[in-house]
Length: 257
Image 1: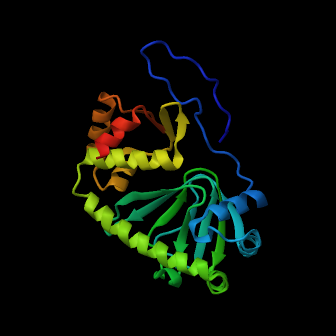
Image 2: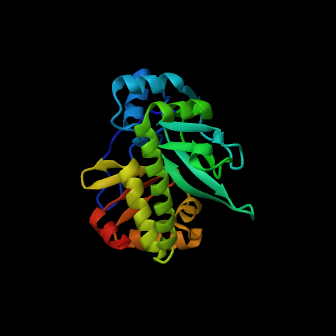
Image 3: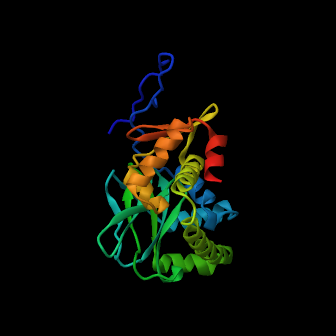
C-alpha cells in the first residue's frame, strides 16, 4: 500500500472536504533512535536513564508485520511483553458464541501482551495489525530480569495493573450511559490518541467499521449508526470509509458528558 498523499484542494462552497490522504500506512524502519524514543515514552520505562533504556532495548527483539498480520491470538500462551514502536494495532476479543468485537486500538508507545507477571497465562484477546507495524518483544525470562534489575519498572507494573482494574470497572459503569455518549467519548479518546489537528478540527484516519465502534462502546452497529447520524446532523462530525473528522470538539465533549 502506498503512503503517497493526494494534493490539497479547496472544495466547492457547501461541500464537505475529504481527508487529503487516502492511505496512511508507511514502511516503518524502527531505527535505534525510534526504539529509544518509544521506550522512553512507554509508561513502564518513564524516567529511566539513557543507559538503562539502552540496556532494555538491547534485550528486545524487533519485528515488522503487515496489514492484517496477527501478533498473537486469543487463547495462545501469554509468554511475551510487547511495545508497539510504530503503526497501529487493533485488539479483538471473541465471545463464547463466536462473536468478534474490537475492544481497543493501540498506537506508538503502547505496551501489550502478557505473562505470569501480569496475572495471566493465556492471551485474552487477538492483536491484529491495522497498518504496517514495528513491534518490540521480550520473552518472560528477559522481562523478569528487567523487573529484578529495575525496581521502578516493577512498581509501575503494579500501578499499571491497578489502573487496568479501575478502567475495567469504569468501563462497566459506562454501559449505563447512552450510546451517543459512549460513541462521542470514544471519538474524543481516539482523537487524543491518533488525531491530526486541522485548525479547530481533528482528523482521525482509522479503518473502523460501525461494528468496530460497537465493540468498543458495548453497543450494536445499528445503534452506533444512529448515534453517528445524530452527531453528523448536529454538525459535530463527518465521516467516510476510513476516516472521521471532528468538526466541533466542544460540542462533542458536551455530547459525551
